[in-house]
Length: 434
Image (tube, rainbow, N blue to C red):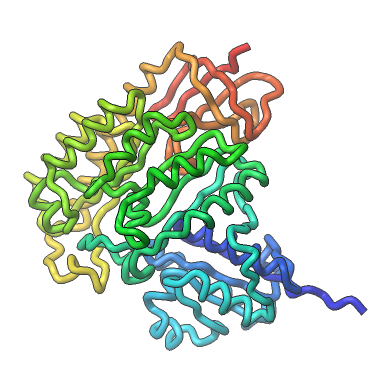
């Protein structure tokens, strides 16, 4: 008699790094007597990969756990497992407050977490599955995590508490995973890690992310390689040359500056001054023609008065980042900033965030207007109604703008030349060039 497989639903919350972890877990589970299901109602076991980065993410994670527990109590599912950052950071509290969860797993050691989940479900861990993933989102691009954890001492950030110190993924494993992703149809690799510029420092004392990018560019089938989370302090010089000279590396970089005021940067423990940071940004613009620079900012950090904020806002208007995200500061227990007085009222933080976003909206609109009549290369991802929707090399998936394309017979996962004929603040519109 055939024994029915255990049905498992994995719910992934938070960032793309969590998504990669979940896809690794799925690949291992599929080797055992387990069926991965999309519908939670059909699952025997629910695994929740949580996020604990900011308050809203914590709340979402807790609510998702409580919902799964409620379904368990009603007999709809048998088991609830919780993993990820929230579980790592608050495991004892969660075990006490939500004991109905069958087991909690951490986040600092992916292999240990995977093995723990597999053993609990009666599945063997297999070394030959290194780099294997079940791709759950677009098959045309894939996130590729080259490191875990972080050694930077940023005052506001709890990631080292949840993820531990920096650990570089061995280059051989990175290439193996990239090759498997390419075989599954990936045309673009989005390189992620808590600090991608740190890669190699823990292995041989040198920052060698440029070496990783160059090796990845040799993988057949990959056309675009995009670098995210490049920490500005101690930025490796050879990385600039690699982005400029290697045709497969997108002329794009995500470099989270967080702030520009020397006073705030020092309080944030960013390890860089405004002058050095501005010098790096200008050098990137000068030495890599056509580069798109994305950044992330944090407003309302302890020590940010009106003068410091105005300095930041002025810099945003003057430098004109191509892409930008901005968060408001919230106290994270266990961080060094938690010992400082949170002196900026919540309402004022939101106002400062709005002022930055309003300035960026104007910059983006002006940049998009300048694209009218130009031909651009677009990677098509999907079709919605009358439009094919894709991205240029200047846009990372999920967080940056898109291009809405008219034409016939376009295929997802293919690149096309598109002429821009209209624009909005954060999107372009165009027609496929005949």
